[in-house]
Amino acid sequence: MDRRVAMARAAVFAAFTLNGVLLAMWVVHIPAITDRTGVSASTLSVLVLLMASAALVGMRLAGPAADRFGSRTLVAVAASAISVTVLGPGLATDPVTLAIALACFGFGMGALDVSMNTQAVHVERAYRRPIMSSFHAMFSAGAFAGSLVGAAAQHAGWTTQLTLLCSGIGGLGVTALLVPHLLGESRPESPSHPEHYDRVGAQTGNSASQHATADARTIEPDASDQRPGGAVPTDSARPRADQRGERRRRTQKVFALGCIAFVLLLAEGVAADWSALQVREHLDTSEAGAALAFGAFSATMTLGRFLADRVSGAIGPVAIVRYGTLLAAAGFAVVIASPWLPLTLLGWAMCGLGLAGGVPQIFSTAGNLGGTTAATDMSRVFTIGYLGLLAGPAMIGWLTAVIPLTAALAVPLMLTLACAAAAHVVSR
Image 1 (cartoon, helix red, strand yellow):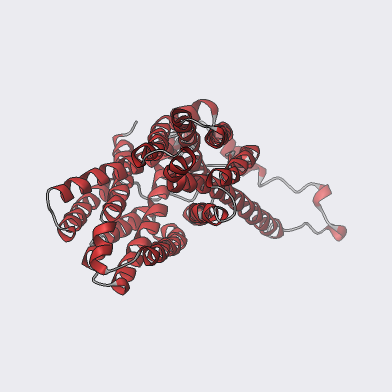
Image 2: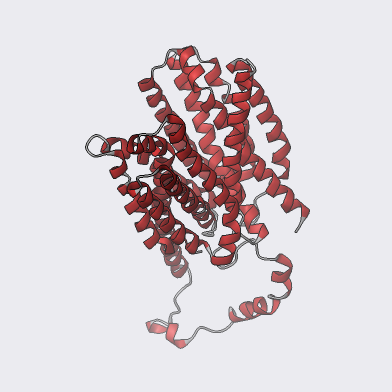
């Protein structure tokens, strides 16, 4: 493997880790920041929704920007932006300034999500084997490390401003180190000739076919292609029709991938936000016992993302999504039916392992559709999927007004089963 590609992989690892660390820095300081700004729990929920909405805008704009200026440039800009804006919540003094700070931070997070995943697709293409899940695993590892560092800083008596300032400076330093090692954009690709094909082989082994193609262009048109009067149809109408058909197929594929991402991220959001409360209410356990539910889910999800690349290389992305969602559905079924804490924890662990590899496969497929709009395609899939991450917890919250929380988990169970049936969408 070319050392340049290996360094690019390490640089993308660093970008995903940085994203997780800086997000965790905001999360662990939420109590201190809300106390300082006088924000109530209800106001905080509105501000978090504002941050998520800004992230969606950042994702949507980042795709075309990455296609135009290159994902390496956009990673540099977005990573620098979140390294600077992570200090904003620490400097906020009231709800208005906190809202502005979170909107700026969320916008940068969304832009970095799309740009670093686009760069990850380039690196994966150069490796010629699945490595996308490992990048997402580094985000989870970064969030875990950031929470530990933030907790240690609070235990040491550091102020929120000092901790976030050091985090931002560290983020700028990491960004300056990783950006030079990212891959530049190469020539536009097409579905029939991806840019990761070996150029030496393409120039030597395919030379005969290239000459044959060139010679074929000089052959006189067949009589069957002639129109009445001896006129030969021009090729200009055919490419335009082909381009329209290709755009329509691409749009349908992107929408289908977005729907699968929506379901997977909806299930992930439900597990992340409601697992602990479900255990406490359904089994009447202590808060410490309830916290183990989220721990079981997040631990198996992180482990699953580290393992998913090898599994995907062996059985393919469709099988990863199909069998993973079936495992997640079985996990939700166990959680709903379980009367014991150990069995319930096993169910949440099954959910984490089942959902671990699906989303990276979807993003990788979206980034390899061909053409010159890979980042735009990914940003659309990101946007649809991220809506699921927001809608899932809210939907369960609304349902709990009429049915028990455990019964409401039947929604992600049924959706993951539907996702398993539609897993062929992820085929490359």
